[in-house]
Figure 1 (tube, rainbow, N blue to C red):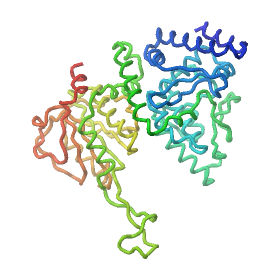
Figure 2 (tube, one colour; figure 1 turned 180 degrees about the vertical axis):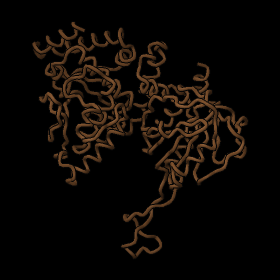
Figure 3 (spheres, helix red, strand yellow; figure 1 turned 30 degrees about the vertical axis):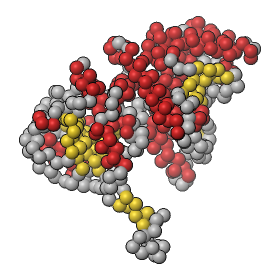
Figure 4 (cartoon, rainbow, N blue to C red; figure 1 turned 45 degrees about the vertical axis):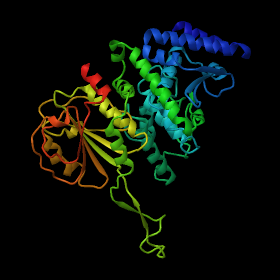
Length: 449
């Protein structure tokens, strides 16, 4: 690491014609260091196509092509950054996590002047909470907490932070947040020892996000196949010990990507989210079909599923890896259908105090129960948790072994996901749709482990 810091210092003294080759060597040395000390990041970086550009504005940038995402190094910007070796390594990890959580493709169309700063803060905070030795001015959830003026939970998905930032931006535009300043936003003052938030500044450009828009949406499927295969190969090359050193959210993000076949329940859930009507809502942008000449009367739009409640059976036969896999499968769907998903553990009762929100990336599940299974506890909690609202979809992840009969308490669309064959499901005449996961090859692989 000392040699890497020395190479970065020497980079500032080299003429332009030598910076490109020196930058490439610094990158190779950093990857070799990561291959020895942190194989997950090192193996991902060693598989990326890397180019250099002397006049690039940022030291690092992910650039989209028709088939993949490539890493472009800015030799002049890297020299001007005055990074140390640990900071260079941290920013390479930073880039890998952007790619792991699909940030470039998820936010490629949100790089305008109003949204781009918010996207940068949200995605950087989601990534940087997992890193140390970051350069000065790096955005974290703690910085967002200072900006928003209220506590921000760490290690959340970028979508959670982006929603909070958009609310803050809307408040600043309405003039209700005096500290917000201009719509350009605010970040911690890098020159302040206390890290206080000052309005009107811009994010520190440690890596380029503007190049995310180079990834045309028409090629997103090809890039996603490449990305999934990349992390599948890397995940398969890691030993159990090496995987065990990764944070739980990274392990959970890797698990869904190794599935070889889509599950039928995913197609069913997509249809439920995007097509199945769940009531109607007024829309003044549409004519009223019954009275088209009455311009003051609104038309209607079909409302589809916007909220999902997932109840996870925490009985002994449900392992954490299996639960993380199922939540990961659901999380991937949310990149297309941005529904609000609440997860509730249950055994003989619903543990509402352990509930959490699933937003594009599953968090590490901590078992709170682990006793028997009582499905009626879920149905008894539904009136309190969903209140019979329209647009609610209820999913129950379970091994299927519980009581023989249940008493529905409130109208709800139900989807049962069983880890056992359907014929072994204990409930007779269960409401809703019942699907078994026993034919899914990745699920079976997890069971064998």
